[in-house]
Length: 85
Image (cartoon, rainbow, N blue to C red; front, side, top):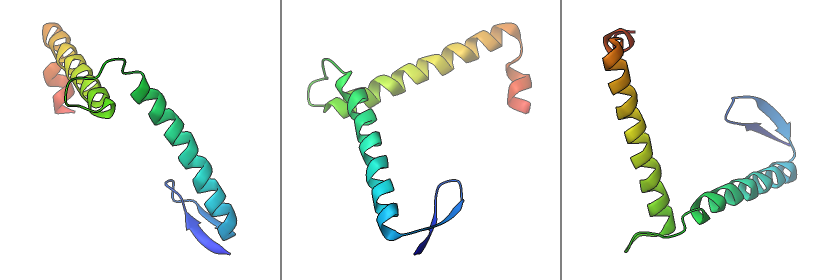
C-alpha cells in the first residue's frame, strides 16, 4: 500500500497496481481528447505541426475575445470597475 495525493489534495491509500491502472486510464483519456483537438486542424500552417497550429488558433481566438470583451466594457463604462476589484 502507498499513500497517494491527487490534484485535489485528497489522500488515498491504494495498492500500487491500482495507482498504475488509474494513471494509465487517465492518460488514455487525456491522449484521446488531445488527439481529437489536434486532428480538428484540417490544414496546418507551413513549417508547423498540427499541435502548433491548433495552439496558435486557440491563442488568436482567445486574444480576440479578450480584446472584444474589453471594448464592450469600455463602451459601457464598466472597465475601471472590474479592474479595481
